[in-house]
Length: 134
Image (cartoon, rainbow, N blue to C red; front, side, top):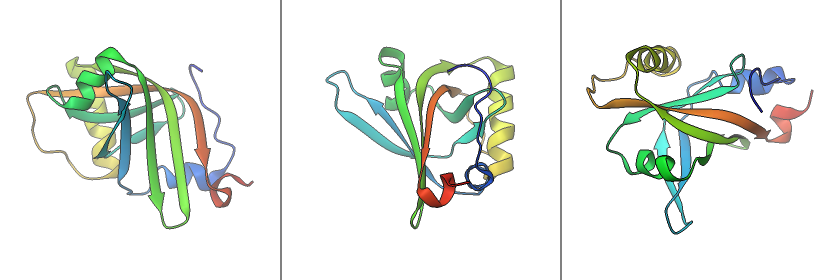
């Protein structure tokens, strides 16, 4: 999927604006999952999810070799998972945009000169029945 991702459920759209910790799952070279806690933002208009990270992190190295990822957030019985293909971006403009989105959902991120953006082109959004029922 590319471009705008339709989120037909207002509850699901709202869930992705609330402050929830997420997990990012990447795949190691042997195919085993690597799961880390992250902050993530959703941009349905662009069809993207974004995670700010350090260029030296293991999950960034994994994405450079295997682009398939999942980002999940859970709040009690409510959950949502975004699946897609990730790329690592490092241009100042892309990093700044991701930092601003992160600050809006969470807080201003600490300075990190090695910061990159994991940009996920969303292929699927899943969620609990309480979020996806319209």
